[in-house]
Image (cartoon, rainbow, N blue to C red; front, side, top):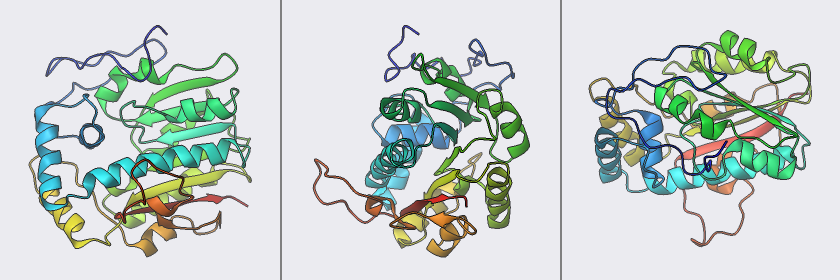
Length: 287
């Protein structure tokens, strides 16, 4: 690919359909720029440019009620990078299934993993047509490794597993990454069932890496309540720490367990001591 993966193609004009790049076969819906989308709001809060005015308005409304939202998005992203470095390094994982990819930014999963182990193979999954527009940036890879992109919804684990098997050998240990995506599944039992279905399909030695918004800060809960009441919005449901920990039932948590994302194996930061954030997660190994 000639494009720099950290600077994807410009946004399409509002209403312009997303076209599948080479290797992506499934048809996609048109991008709806009149309704805010979680991936584009997240991109805006991270300082990106791949968003529309409606996304920026939604992000600003959340920040009005919960000023810590920018810290939460930033430090959640940092945890993702630390997690991938651990998995590709200490844990020796060479396959990654990253569901809820979001828009490409700096240090995407494949960049971090292949920096540690060039032979790593990564499959990204998302259902936002705008992410598909940027899939070429995601599909860059080292010659030794591979990346692929699947347009699918997290609620369809069967489709995800079938498509991922074209790039990943699911009989070998694989890291399942569900970073900030399960809050979009309103029913907790359904979210648990999705995690179980995906992990059941992976062999011993695989890992689950997950974080989600937590209900530990009333201002964050209130900001989400107001956001979720908007027309056409896919609601995001924060979970209790006990519920987030429940996703790891039956797995062996690695230290330090389920904690706020700023406390998961923190590293020095130019911003000083990390703040408390209403987002928690962990990493666990399948016995």
